[in-house]
Length: 197
Length: 197
Image 1 (cartoon, each protein chain N blue to C red):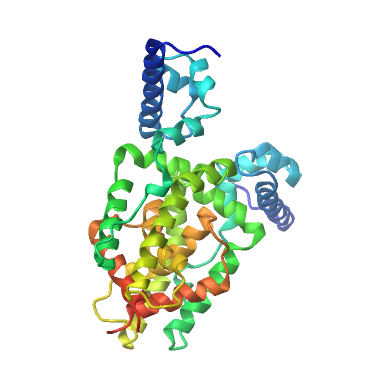
Image 2 (tube, rainbow over the protein chains, first blue to last red; image 1 turned 90 degrees about the vertical axis):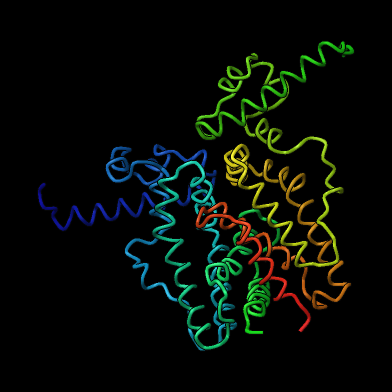
């Protein structure tokens, strides 16, 4: 291995970013099935081999485009103002906003669908994206349980799925629009269900 | 068009069933992406043209294999013993059993994933499978609301998504095993959240 010069590192980073942007754009325009490494290379203005040097598949390119690099999963935290209902509303509203981001909608759907065919991709998504988020819910709900806002003995893993499951269902199956009002209603009803009796 | 003889109708029905069975088996064995009309035809012992005469795509074959023909959506009903919590537990336990059916697991996942690439398939699944089921929840929850077991003013569409969303999330994302105990916990917590205060 030879050390890269600052110039070639900068060129590499520019190519990498162009490739990721091209992948996001193309999925949004024509869908995941028509996405090819050739098309990404053409749009990004690089050679196919440049892409294959860094990523083994179109799913891997898209994964990196959607999942921010260098995010430390341990730093994902829900807000904690002491008011569990308000904090969950804020968190679910932010999720509604993320899922509604038109630039990320098609790629995120494509990746989620692709996990059904590609267990390795599913494991990578679970490890780097899904579980860190779900563990952040667990920590926030534990604090609420200690504060007496959630009944003792409630399984917090189930509790968090009551919050994120409905949004995921509505988003992936496109049954109804995802709105802040919906996020609020889910949070209110679930917090009621979790409260000490 | 010429009338079919009883013999040719019987032969057609036998071929149709063999094709649907072959599609289910092959998806379970090697996944949706390796599924081809050629492979289905070979396994079913029919010609490719026989399949193309009846279905436009492998997704369409799988759809018919998974979705029972001739089910009238209006006849889908949840049990109504008068006890909403018990009825929801029974319903969610039955869903856990269905999603755990190894013969249907891979094809149902494949179809769900495919809806992200194929809006027509998504619309067909919504119309013939998803919405009839969700409407049955709405009717049962309406009865519970009339009986005073659910608070007035609760949005029942959101309420049913609190029930089915968590199971869907856990199943599709394979985060944890789907069990009857889980179904019961979801039903109990949600019914608590919906109850008049």
